[in-house]
Length: 205
Length: 205
Length: 205
Image 1 (cartoon, rainbow over the protein chains, first blue to last red):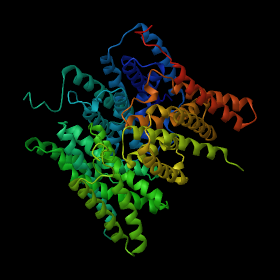
Image 2 (tube, rainbow over the protein chains, first blue to last red):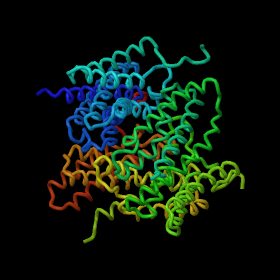
Image 3 (cartoon, rainbow over the protein chains, first blue to last red):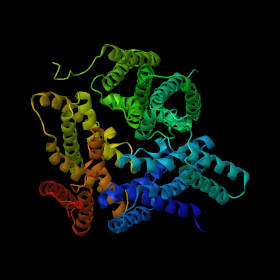
Image 4 (spheres, rainbow over the protein chains, first blue to last red):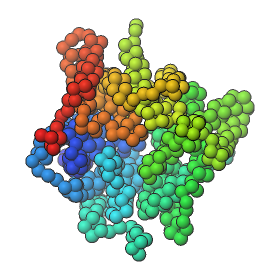
């Protein structure tokens, strides 16, 4: 059977790794820095998830093709990026993909392990946001989750609940997964594009 | 039977959550930021404790009323604080309560799991100080534990040993718990009030 | 039988603790800060290693003589350093010793637990570099691993693979351990001395 979970996880790893490598290059890091930031961004959220749920061995220790892929990407990216310049704003799309996939997979694993919807939504948000928060902290950026000018964690949280409700209403797990995931990616991109935020600065109101 | 440990833990969670939310609001964070900082401050120390002692499931995963309470507090606090301004110095009291409770409960759990007094005191200090250190780091403050102008970790450490000795001398676990806890809260408040420190700046001596 | 692993671990703990205490003192921290930074530097890497590999109890919980030793060192160091001034550049040597020992011991434990060479090399690098990265972050320094002017993580990674190949070719585990360890220490010191780096700044080329 085609393993949709594993396939999504792989895409999420690649998307987050790209977002990390773009930021690392824009800070002019050397290839080891590019690999390190790519690795931490791609695998940080899942590592936190597995540690919190006591789910051993960690997924990247079990699936060593994932860190190997990140290493290969870092080598290619470091050489390619010498000739090409990348603006940091390019990370919005891969970051949204990674956020969507890891949020839903984190929530889904928590449900599988028998946790409640509420706990599963918290674990989903942590899994989705932690890798990007590490990336931004290590590269001296304010993490998206603490930027007031864009909603981020709220979309991840809402996406979890949409996934739970769809899974409960619909027969198909795959369909529910896809709806939650697409919701997060689309709303995150819309939030950046149309500047949607939870709270206006008081100085402007 | 009335569960004193659980009752204290709940008060500690509320106290640390309030301290986190005050700092988050004073940095003008939106409601998601207020919840996130409250959550991390209240549950960070206990999560570190449970991971280090391999004590699964984590206490906030087992007791989901704790994160639900923090969520409700964040909603109320975000609306309430629009009309009220809070100085950051207001965190001293809830922070001292949280420090006292989590230090003693961390040490007590370590003793229950069969660790020595010395290891239990280290785990107690970590449990008590880690949530506040995360709060201060995420809000770009120098953590209390690294501020030279006030003693913090030393009080937590001394409180652990006082608790161990009382527990050994007295028949009553509850009495020993209370003495250790009150010692930490009172001395912490006194240290802030009377500016007690371990080492004077050399320029002043 | 003489336990070479335990002996090396003890030397690594002492070396990393010294590097942490030197940085803490150069930031003029009080004795509690000196102990905290020493503790975190010496035991951070091994704690991350044990958590990632689910290897409980943590090594410093099992061997409480290690944190006791760090406490004794912090007391002595705090008094001694009042009369002596230390430049931060003095940490290069103890840091290189700690990097070498913890990298190889982390990789060796991962092999013992049945992980592949690639996963073991990643876990070795994490074990070797995490304590120092915590030290530098807490003391507001750019971690060595992210400094472009010196190679650090690459030497740790190369040392792991040299150890694996030696262990595979040679009969003696001890000899293989020693070769990997000496390679890391010597190359790290040479990298600092002769200013070896992976990538020149583009402005200079």
